[in-house]
Length: 194
Image 1 (tube, rainbow, N blue to C red):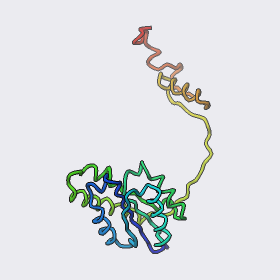
Image 2 (cartoon, rainbow, N blue to C red):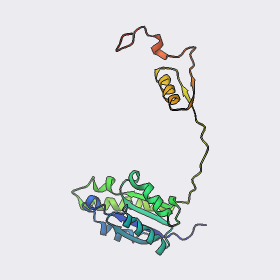
Image 3 (tube, helix red, strand yellow):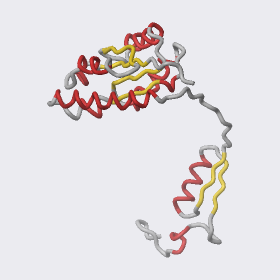
Image 4 (cartoon, helix red, strand yellow):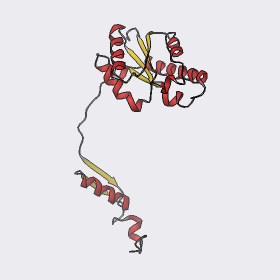
């Protein structure tokens, strides 16, 4: 059985990158209306040390068990925020990001009302996902440092050589009796015409 959800929503202004085209105060008011949201706040730069400290402090103070960070692209700062929540004992997979910068504020630079409404929708979608998150454990598996290259044409031969030169054992498999592919059947090859 799942514990009572206690969700915190953190809206990043990203300086003027988000706040310049989205009403972040309106996003906080909206976030506080969502069921199980016990805390919502905006930060100037959530990825900064003070911003991360605010997230950590809030997780402890409000006993948050899910976190939504509305900011930039997860590609940029998802590892930052996963580490941040993990440092205060929250499973890093109980954190969800809402990209309101690239997916919203940068697209709607000159339409603050529409940008704000779209940002609400993006936050609501991430909030809905966060409600269903479950703790995860990363597993480690041994890796066999060998590669299989299928196809002995020019690309396959070149790939096998690159992998072998990187220090890995390579098995090259070709269905024909000889390697070289179509290139082996040509009498001249551009650009040298050899």
